[in-house]
Amino acid sequence: MGYRSVMKRAWPTLAIAATCIGACTDPTARNASARSSVLGPQATLPVLEPPCQRDAEGRYHPSLQSVLDAAEPGGTVFACDRSEGHPGPLVLRQDVSLVGPATVRGAAGPAIHVVGGRATLVAMTLVGGTGAVEPRLDGDTFGGVVAAWEADALAIRHSTIRDGEADWGGCIAGPRRGPLHLHDTDVSNCTARKVGGAIWIRAGTLEDSLVRDSLAPFGGGVAVRSVDVTDGDVHLPGTEVVANHGSVQGGGMLITGPARVIGGTVRDNTSEQGAGVMIAEATGGWLHGTAIGNVASVGGGGVFISGGSATLRGVSIVENTTSGDALPDGRGVGGGIWVAGDSTTTAVLFDVTLEGNEASWGGGLMAAGSATWSDGPQVDMHGGMLHTHTAEDGAGAAVVGARLLLDHTTVTDNAATTGGGVILERSRLDVFGGTWSGNSPTDITSEAGTYDGPIEGELICDPSGCNAMP
Image (tube, rainbow, N blue to C red; front, side):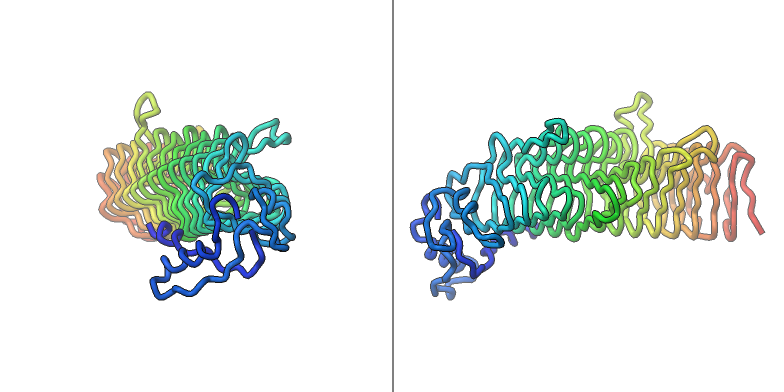
């Protein structure tokens, strides 16, 4: 992966007095050697970077914590690399940058605990930890490796973070009132006992990073929890959320509140519900991302929307599966998307591509809720496509006690035992234009029978049948 080669670059040259620990007998020579190995043999001149682990007055500090405590607000501390690493937790109390390469090992508590200010971590390897205790969470722990609940902001670049365990945010948690920014960082093998297996985030950016092999009951990879719209969005440009597990919901990612998540690829994650992404009682949603190859054992192989009013825009949901393995009858629902709730639940899909997903009910899309469609959830799909899905019932979409609007949507080449394009039970379907072809055995199936085109203008189907409108 590209992030590995980037992480081996030399750390940035920062013209700020900093700080040497352990075996750093000649930190200037160390830096020159590292720079030469990256830039090539022609880079033989000494690199005049500050020596590690000395404060602004040039005084040597025997511990990394000591020099952090002595740093000027807004200053930079250069940590020496040493084979055994530095013991955590290191406590950051003010605006400060900690620059490696160096390793910090958490044990009882996190590796890094940010209790105030704006912290920046560069070229660090942070391993292990059991998080910090938060009394306001009834003594729960948060941030197994990096606990930044009280930070104003946290930025982590060119780093590796792994093997943490906590109740909230198995490896990283917070800040709760500021942004988290990750760049070119690998977060892996993390466990949360409650929410956010790898990362708990309220707002910020995870860029060109990898979140993998982590688990939690809810949000095995990333848990996004916003309180109000002022928290801002979460951006995932170039980031992959891979092979995480949510034992209950949200294998790759959990989204709650008004937050919008923008970008990111969520692949090969697993959960009972919402193997790729779980959007729970939210007023935000997911934009311009990709869910691929995720597997749910109950419903929502790609995305599960439960309650709230969620939006998907420009999202590709491809080749996800609901196996049904956790259900007595084995009939999983919503291979691509599953929407569940009552009449207060809405899901709006703009230019969403659903392709090649599989489930017993609703290979591409399942909307389900109530005994009558008027009391169930509503799904509005504008543009986009339902293409090449497979299912026993409703390969393109299955709608049970719910309402589905297809506005100029392409519904093609879906194959099922019953209802190749769309199957309806106690539901209503509104169709405006779009392209319908190649659905097997028919385009639309309801209690009143089947309808197999043409679909050119406006078509309304309900339990009484399908009627083309003039």
